[in-house]
Each structure stands twice: as structure tokens, then as C-alpha cells.
Image (cartoon, rainbow, N blue to C red; front, side):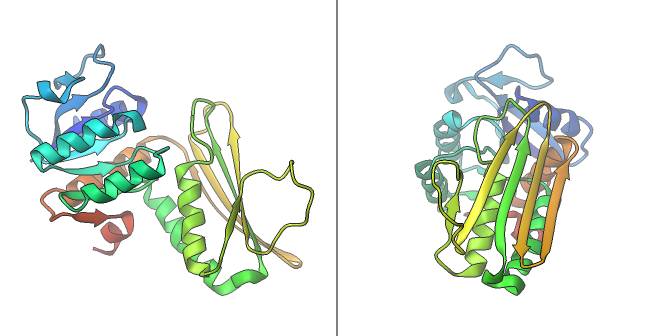
Length: 251
């Protein structure tokens, strides 16, 4: 039985994960960590890592970038691997996570959906075939409570395309302030926020007289929770290093 430390346990994603693990035969939540400790759970919840009494085999983090220091401190102190699923991280925080992977196993993905990672594989293939003959635009849509924009997933898609094209791509987030034609090396990223949209990502390849679109729509948060639990089971007991959804799919 894999014991999981759930950071951000009382958030929306944390509660979905809690419900799924309540019926899991291979894993359970050992304890939770959250700045909000008022919600009642079937496991203890802490707001200070110094108070934690239970041990864990792996951390799942669906919290907030502000809690990253606590997660890193806990992982270093206990030599526990972690699944980092929180988005909106700053560049220096990502560097801190990369450094942590030299000491423990880290699984990091801006999106824990298997479908999104399949989309990324398809987008990379399309980029290889279409090259610079098609203009590429990414449109992402999320609920009106999402703070970061563009989404971490949209940036993950853009990075995959950029790495595939091997050229000096430029991410363009807004066009209204500059009156000029679109450059060939641009990747446009556009954010929509409204209602209760769980998550939609559309990648548009616009060429002469033809348009190719690859898209993914998340119908519930459960797909992300399922992916994070699979990732936790995957890295539990693994040696230090950085792991991704691609590693898990290939294995």
C-alpha cells in the first residue's frame, strides 16, 4: 500500500483526489497539508510541516505556488519523492524543483491528463511535418476562477512545438498594441476565462487554403486526479531524477 502526502488537500483538486483514493486498493492518503485545515477529512491535515507525525512514500502537490517552499523542505527532510501538479510556478521555482530532483524523484507536468499528453505527441508530429509553412496558434479556455494565464498546459504545448521546430520561436500573447503583420516564427497564445469551463486546448495550424486543428476538452477534474495518482504510484520508490508523463507512458 502506497502512502501519499496530499498537499492542497482541501482545494477542489485535493478533494477529488481524496474521493478517488478512498476506494483505491493500492494507495491511501497518509496525511494532508493545507493552509485551510477546517474541512474534515478521513486523514489528519496540517498547516505546518513541523507538526507532521505520519510518514509517506510520495507527495502529490495540487496546492499553490506559495506552498512550494514547504513542499521542498518536507521532501528534502524526509527524502520523499513528489508529483508536482501545481501550475503558475515562477521560473525560479521551476529551477528549485529541478534542483530538488537531484535529491529525490520528481514527476512534474503542467497537465496530468493522459489525453493532453497524447495531444502534445500529435502536435509535435504535426510540427515536424508542417514545419514553418503553417502559422501556429494556441487557444486555451478555463473557468473564471483560474488565476494564471496562459495556462501551464498551453505553455507546455508551445514549448513542445518550439523544441520540435528547432528555430527561434517567439511567443506572442497579445496583438492589439502592435500594428504589424504576423511573423513566421510566432506562436500565438490566447486565454479565455469564463463560467465553469474545466479546460479546453485548441492548437491551430493555419496554412495556405487549409487549416488543421487538434484539440482536447476536459469534461471534469477527475481526469487530472486520475493522472496524478498514476504518477504517484509510478515514482514511488524510484531513484532521484526528473520524470514526466512521457516516461510513464513509455514504461
